Length: 95
Image (cartoon, rainbow, N blue to C red):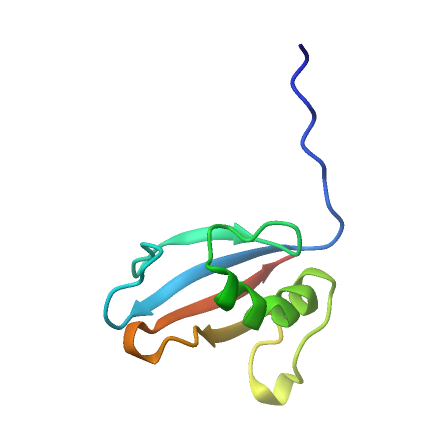
């Protein structure tokens, strides 16, 4: 049986980097982890975190951004909702 082709999706690649973990991430993420994430790939994030950051992923993947006055329009820092085991990610658009 032929191996199915992996679909290619439109837009820019978005890379997530774990900047810090306060406590113990129940999904095993550690500071320094880097992975691709997209509107079609949760990259192993828990559903709560992915749900919260989905609008930022869409924005970066499809060319949106924050005003230049706010910093780099290709980068956003996000935090999970678990304040006892806080994971901080940096999402970066690769052009």
